[in-house]
Length: 172
Picture 1: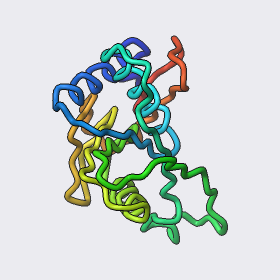
Picture 2: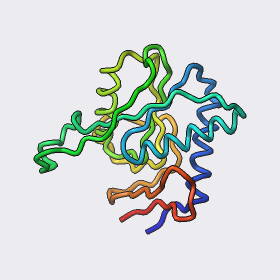
Picture 3: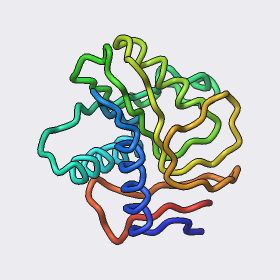
């Protein structure tokens, strides 16, 4: 079942960008969680730059949380697939906007916080998510939410770096 189409996704990301800018957070950096959180983070970064009418790039990073997951044993994979982690800036004293596509139990975010800690001590970390499914297992909440859809069913975000009519968020 489709819950967001391409135009709605773009609108939600623009709303996230405006919410972040309304907080007047200085010295920000955006960090996306692999895999679709990176795509949402890239789009969010572009929206912030567009709204601010600036060509100055916001520091941008990518996190892979695979080796920090608390369910790695349960996943059944003998060798986990490791993706890129690339934090090309000093996180110390930065205000990090951590971005993921879907927030559910909070376990992915807990893992991402552990990874970030290995890079230094940010001034603050705020969480932005395109879709909040609810049903937390850990005391983690998003600071910026594009869309709330409470469900225990899987939510799939099918988007790429560039906006397309094929972009869609569905519930299985």
